[in-house]
Length: 329
Image (cartoon, rainbow, N blue to C red; front, side, top):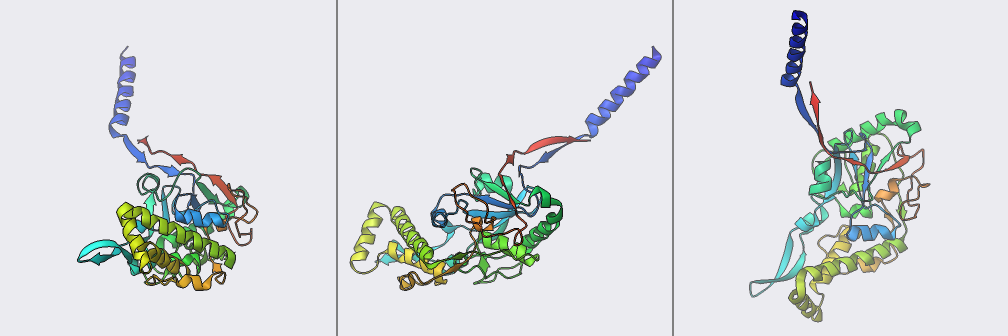
């Protein structure tokens, strides 16, 4: 009886010790990506409309900089660009133009966000239709070291978001500070992370006819957005302006198209129309990071990569795992 009592006492002590010294650790929300994988996202807006003209399905991309808990990417908050206004007798009326410096050098630029923030707070990424670009199973062991190196480069880089990179992607420096007039867009930054780590991926060439379609689409989308934001009375004032020249909606639309095409962020004229069907774009959208053999959900083979130009040979649907607690002794 005494022996049984001692055994029970020891068991109780051990149980109590485990309970006292155990800790609950929170495992953050994560996605099915490893360090160096590229994360693809859809998102509504004029950028998606532009890229759809090219046959693209995804409109934003970033890179996992650890095993699925954080994404580093390059983005621009258009709604935060300061607006310069016209005035009538010291009364602010219609928009004159967007701040040229902020339009050409977009902020926040390159940043890191945890999964919960990226998908649920800033909404820079969207779960619906999301995907992860990674090596094939056969190449995983060989290629992962190179993708880890690309992620380390991405962690180091700091730069502005440059809308002009949609036409000329070659404008990112190996630097961890902002340089005015230098930077890239989302997929261009993913490309450069691989490039600075030693892998030169292929780059798409967009012919003048498609560039012109994109320019016209962008102009129309921005013009409509300006009128919608202005409201009924504002749109009326814009129409009055149009009777005496160029309305605010046309000026801002021109400014944005000029910035995309020629980095002329101060120019609200129709300069871009002088180059209809003449401009060739050299840049990658997110879908261009895919293998050319891959058919995207829109039914198009937009990718320009081959097995020799890219470590990324497999596309997996995005899977998000909610955060949870685990007990650690």
